[in-house]
Length: 126
Image 1 (cartoon, helix red, strand yellow):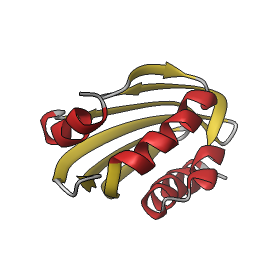
Image 2 (cartoon, rainbow, N blue to C red):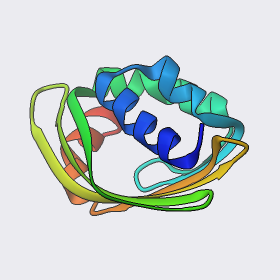
Image 3 (spheres, rainbow, N blue to C red):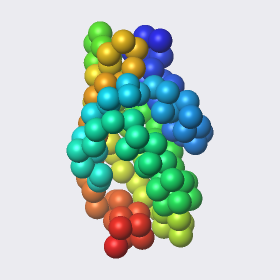
Image 4 (cartoon, rainbow, N blue to C red):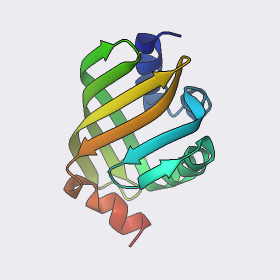
């Protein structure tokens, strides 16, 4: 898959809760700088995060608003409409940066205001 295909499939599979497809988009040695989870390395960390996502959110949609792709790099500005497991709404604008290697996501970082995610963090980490 080219970068455009990978990025489109990333959002499509995450929004559908298709975690097997979502995981298949990442390099096994992926490095992620995630606004809430911090710096993580390796696909096994992402595999472990799926359970937390499924338990922690009753709704999760990450809808791209603007996608820029340059070779093996991409930046996506998106909007998250979610709700924690208790149904408390979460709305946030996000920017994701992706770097691909051999058709897989090798590095990813996201940037957003963390305050909208307080209902998730307080329920799952507090």
